[in-house]
Amino acid sequence: MAKTIPAIRGMNDILPDQAACWRFVEDSARAVLTGYGYGEIRLPVVEKTELFARTLGEVTDIVEKEMYTFLDRNGDSLTLRPEGTASCARAAIESGLLHNQVQRLWYQGPMFRHERPQQGRYRQFHQIGAETFGMAGPDIDAELILVTARLWRILGLNDDVVLHLNSLGTADARSVYRTQLVEYFSAHVEQLDEDSQRRLHTNPLRILDSKNPSLQVLIEGAPRFLDRLDSESREHFEQLKTLLDVAGVRYVVNPRLVRGLDYYGKTVFEWVTDRLGAQGTVCAGGRYDVLVEELGGKPTPAAGFAMGVERLVALLMERGVTPPAALPHAYLVVSGDEAERQGILLAESLRDRMPAIRLQVNCGGGSFKSQIKRADKSGAAYALLLGEDEAARREVGIKSLREDRPQQNVSQVELADYLAKILQV
Ligand code: ATP
Ligand code: MG
Image 1: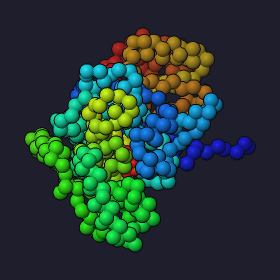
Image 2: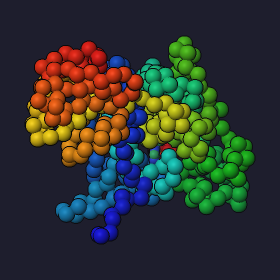
Image 3: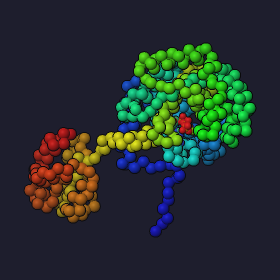
Image 4: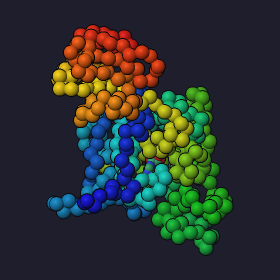
């Protein structure tokens, strides 16, 4: 036998039994986003490396060590997208979507990061994201949060997630704070781990985000940015909190919440669960008012979020939420040459008459008994039996697979009406 070829580590197949959960998340997100007036945008999976290198920040985890970058046959450096925001902004600029208009956009699809695979952390993972352009106020920040809060309610995850909120201020205020932070951590440099020492002069805010338990006391004692916020950002933050209070969205202000990417400023937020172990952030977002300009567009305020579909699906599974699986309504058992010919015609005419029917036809032969076993295994509610006798009489036997009821025989011409009644499709 030939050697099997396994999938790439950290890149998972999503099998049909999990796909129902995935669809539940995706369909619900699409419905909510559409309801709030967000238009779908579909973006390429590969972009020029420069797009991410310029926007995400040279010393972020993603750019430093996580990007799937390669030279294509023309010698151009390309990267599998690690996130969607930069691509979305690029596309909006390139297609003139930002000229004198506001935009509410959403996307979904795979993202790629070369991380150490573990529960909740994969190398190909999937995000559903929303990005808004042209709106500077806290009202759109609140709307983005309301979109996600509504989605959690629909998914039944409302009680499992907590909203963490922070402000990263303006770039000027951040750079003053940065100096204070470097001073503070430099005084305790011997306590910092290797990662944090490296970040001390490149990206000191990220130290606040460290998950290393032995750093927590030191981080707890660090100067807090929220106490040093510029007045513009402070007002923005206060207004956002008021809007969330009015809308009845609960949150915790988390002064240590920083986002991993350089383009964020002012509002940042994360939805966090304690039910998934270390990888507890299911959705993250915030404002990125500088990004469009950095990409060569006119200065345009912007805000958005991205949620991790794998983590949401894991949460649904952990919760035991089972969305209705698309089991077959009926399984057609066919035995004998004439029955097989009648069967294919009958199945096609049922599909014509009842477009919503989920009907599986037995293929590959087998005895009546083994076909009924397959019918049962398919999860179908009914087996439709078409053997030589039924074929001769132009009938079909209808056997309930889930309830103890006597078999019914129905003529083939009346079958569609009969099924429509019992299946209500
Ligand atoms: P983390 O702190 O968990 O590394 P991040 O800050 O790198 O997250 P973002 O870039 O903000 O994550 O992505 C938004 C969301 O996408 C995350 O909150 C998470 O749900 C999901 N996500 C990010 N990276 C991965 C991954 N490697 N595998 C699965 N989901 C991921
Ligand atoms: Mg990360």
